Length: 237
Image (cartoon, rainbow, N blue to C red; front, side, top):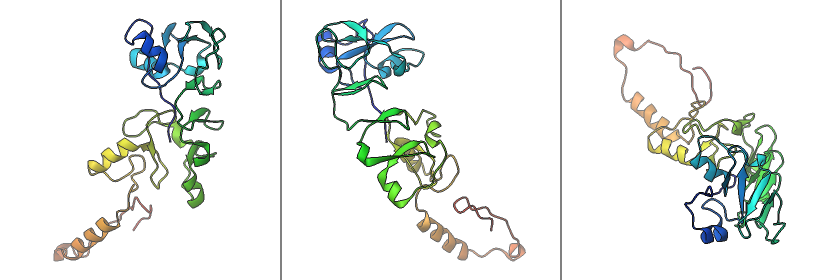
């Protein structure tokens, strides 16, 4: 699950003009540059803007763009009013998104943004308020209301509009897939949000049970009892 990407240049150098006209930027392949209303500069995409400025840019706020083929400044539209070039094979005028690369993009009304990967591979869960793989619709999933509207609990970066794929553990909370893999590599197997195990821990629990059984308590502690809350089943034992 991810959104679109883009690369940039702010019209003050950095990218060769002919190269820019042909390929757009590192994030998107397109034939238009945005005039960013927040700082009145020119960038190929919002990611290029955010990498170079101290503030964030909402591409839906764009009202003007510049054709990279003929340099005509114009209102946001699918094709250049001067030379007729189409700014992107995939065009969404709701998100102001243009891309010449086929990523099976589609606009999700529920999410309010464009997604990649193909509409047939995802469904929008109204309670989670996000697009999820259709496999989860068939086997069921644990809903967490508005789960994608929070930041990744590991890197603290936005999840809903992120280009980074997400991992969805059984507890239903989200984190970026690279962050999930980093946690496992570091020996942390519990969800950072609710502390439920994110992978099957049966082998470890069986090993620990055998270790406990093989290590009897000293007589003076044999009758001691402790109350334990299991963070996987949430039962007190």
